Each structure stands twice: as structure tokens, then as C-alpha cells.
Image 1: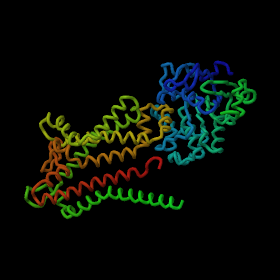
Image 2: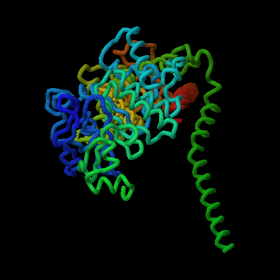
Image 3: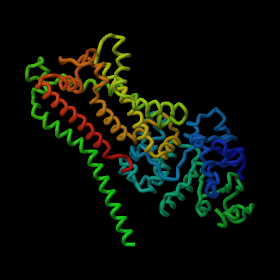
Length: 256
Length: 280
């Protein structure tokens, strides 16, 4: 693993619960700066819930709460010195299905996360929107219709729009929750290429049930099973010679 | 086998026929009422009807301009008071209304929704007329607003619940505070539904009579002062239809036709507003 100073985000004995049901059990996992970490595991293993703890989205679900620590640049996001709203501005998120705001134009969708922080001069906003759309590899396709409807875009374009919306406020961490689950192979490929590009600027955590995807895009892979972190390591090592028999069984497709 | 198929078809045909008949029965009164109103009221509608005020009892001629204007003013007061409170309550119920308080507010709204309008009228009289010893259009408007609030609250909540939760999460994940999520994402998506709900609410209270009997009272003169008693179409119909003069009855029919047309126009406007709803 990378040296301690390079760790941007880290969970320490993080548990996530719904009322009294423990979904994620005492997971300690570091996320080194500017790397992609894939979280894999069978359905219901708690990987999405774990991800939602990293930007305090989990507590918004009815009965959802978490214990333990999540350190973002050394500060515990559950520690009380940070507001959930501020945490979410520093930790962007893209969901399974594209979620563009249907009442807003393409431009306004990208600008949405910035406008909530206060007024930004038009010219500066134009630049930020352009940069975000370029980072999401969507600029060339939409530059002539920025004022057009966001829901008129294809599914893959909508998902890249959501990536642009998430990166526009310049977060430090980007959480991707099965971002290609609703996309066709071409759209999937674009998002995967994006991961590699985006990790130059952001620390990325991606939840996926597609192991080829994990192998292609990630530097580190963490395997979750029944709410526990079974094993974490460099992706190549995880996929070639995992230490844990459960990991091996899952990766070779014997269960899940 | 073929007998079973035949029986099944007969049963199916019978029930299809039955529901078609029941549907017809359900909408028949609307057509009968409207036809009757046109038949008996249309002949009395002329220019004078819209621009003149009522003449002294027993004389012929005159109009109900005061009632038409009064209806519009009182409904506007009801909107000004009722729409913000109703929609605000709906936003609260949809966004925060999961705990005991939410349940309680929802329950109260449902009870208030089922409260007879005459009871609401007495309530408005007790609080807004009796203390100042004066009937007023304002009290009438507030009484109508009281009827609108629970309706609007529930419709607004329903409309917001139709918006996919994923949009709510997307906004929250961007760092939107909950109130901003509610207002600038959810409410905007549900806007056409909320507008429709408001229009339906307005249409319903526009024809109310009972709550206005003890509040706006009625007025035979043209008066736009909201601190004074005011005439409305519904009150006009009540007075004229129960009066002894043939001319009054004529005007009552005509007023009913105008009121009905207003409500119908609002309902059509509501349809028009839903035309491009999210997701369709």
C-alpha cells in the first residue's frame, strides 16, 4: 500500500447500519491520492452502502447511520467539525442510473453544484462548465446545445453529464456507484476511459459488479463479502494470486 | 372447452358492459346539469348581466357584475392565503414528513379535508367576523383558504412523491441543503402537477357557498373593499334561487351557468397545465 502521507481518504472501523441491522462491519480501508480503488463483491455485500458512507449519503436513508471514522485529509467527516453538506461538496458522487435534473439545461446541470455555493461571475462559470464537460469527455458533443434539455441526451451522455456535474465544483474524491450498470458497451467504455483520465485529478472509488471492469480501471481492489472487507490489494495481485480463498472463489466466478 | 370459452366471453362482455354503463351514469349528471343551465340560463345572459348591478326587488333587468367581481376578489384572497400555506405544508410533508409529526400533520390535513365547509364557515365567523363585529370579504377569503390548504398540501405531497428519489439524492450528493433540494429540484420537477392541484383547489372553492354565508355575507352593491361584505356568484344564486320573483330565478340560472363555466374553464386550464408532465 501507498505510504500514509499519500492517503487522501481512509475509513477506520467504519460500520454502517440500518436501524439495528449491520450492513457494513468495521471496515478499515485507505484510499491513496489520485488512484482508482474498485470495490467488488456479490449483491447485498454492503459495497454500495459502504460507498454511501464516504459522503454521508447513507444517513439520509431512513434508519441509516454509521459508526467509526472516515478521514478525509485527516479530518473525520463524522467528527462534528464538518457539516454533511460540506463533505458532499468535497466528495462528488455518480449513481447507477443517470440522474440529470430534467428541468435544467445541460449548462445548468453542470453549474448546479456551483450555484448552490453562491454566485459566480458568468465568465468564470462558462469556463468552469467548459472545463468540467471536457473532463467528462462530453464537450464536443454538447458544445453547440448547452442550453438544450439534459434529458434529450442519450443514456451514456447523461451519465457523462453527471460526471461533469460531479467534478464541476472541484471535489477531491469522486465516488462512482456502479456507474455503467445502465449503459451499453460503448457508453461503458467511455466511462472506463474517463476513470483513467480523471484519476490524475481526483481520488476515485468505484463500486462495480463487473470484475473485468475492476481489473481494467482500478489500481487497488477491495473485496467485500457479507458486510466485511475480506481482502484488499493491488488490482493485479488480487486478480492473479489473491490471498483469501473467498476472494479467489468470487473472482473465478464460483459464486456471487 | 368451447363452452368454457363461451362462458368466459359472456362474463367478460357482461362486466365490460356493466362498467361502461356505470361510467356513463357517473358522467351523466354533469351533462344534464350543464344542459339544464344552458337551457334555462343562456337566454338571460347579455351584456347587462356582466356590467350592471342588481336592481331593486321586483324590477326587471340589472346584472350581477358585483357578484362576478366579488367571486374573483374572494377567490384571489383565498389563493393568496391558501396557496403558500398549502404548498409549503406539502413540501414539508414530502421532505420531512416521515416521523410522528409528519404523520400527525398528514392526519390533520385529511380530517380538515373532510370537514364540512359550513363548519369551516362557522369557524371563520368565530375568529374573523365576531371579534370585529363586521362581515367582510377578507373573512370569506380566509374561510375558502382554510378549505384549500389541506387539499393543496396533500396534492403537493403526492406530486413530489412522484418525482424519482434518485433526483433528490443527486441534488443532496452535490451538497444541496435539504430545503434547496426540495425547492429548486423537486418542486421544479413537480411544478405542473402542483399547479394543476392548485387550479383544482381553486375550482372547488370558487363554488362554495356555505362558508361565505357567515363571512362575506353578500352585498347588493358593487363594492371592491375587502373589509366590507361582498357578493359572490354562489351567494347570488342562493339569494335569487330562494327568492319569490321570476326575474330572480332567471338570473340565478344565468349566474349558475357563469359560475359553472368558470369552474369548467379552470378544470380545462388544469388539464392544459398537466399536458407536459415529467416523464411522459
